[in-house]
Structures are given as structure tokens and as C-alpha cells.
Length: 112
Image (tube, rainbow, N blue to C red; front, top):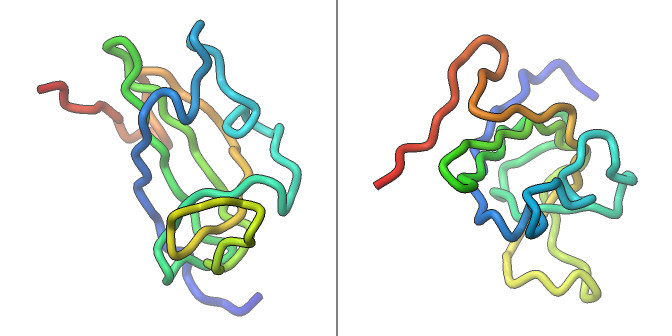
């Protein structure tokens, strides 16, 4: 990998994409549970391996935040992935926070 600075992305999702009915993480976002190349998320075409993302989910008045390492460049979805998106990338969830801070930066989702 070259010495290009990583980009940082903000991803936002509906609770049903990340949490089960009891509010527990689905395997796709449970920290450290992803198998490389088996978990993907829709991303911008400029996304590259080594970039990072913060995924925010609003669940019952609390902000659930995931810190994500992106492990592949943006790519076209494979036919069996059934994504309506133009680009996806593989990822691993590094950590999870609830109404806390990511790297010392407070994270909240405005509720309208």
C-alpha cells in the first residue's frame, strides 16, 4: 500500500440494518466478527482499502456508532450480493460506542 492518507467516511443506516429486535448487534456489525471478503457495505466509488468510516445508527433515542476499517477498494457488487448500489467495499468493525465519543469526538444524531 502506498503512502496515501486515508479518507474518512460517514455512513448512516436504519436500525434494522445493524441491530436485531432486542437492540443487539447483527453479525455484520459486531466488532471483530466480520470475515474478510464476506461483509460489504455500500460505499462511494472513491473509497479505498485503508480508509475508515464511522457508521451511525439511531436506535430508540440512543446513537449507536461503529468505527470501521475499510479493507477493500470500492468495487462493483458481485451478482450474489444482491446490492442495488453501484459500489460496495469490504470492511471490519473495529469498535462500537453508544451515545459516547469516537476518538474523543462526541457523536450524536439530531432527532427531529
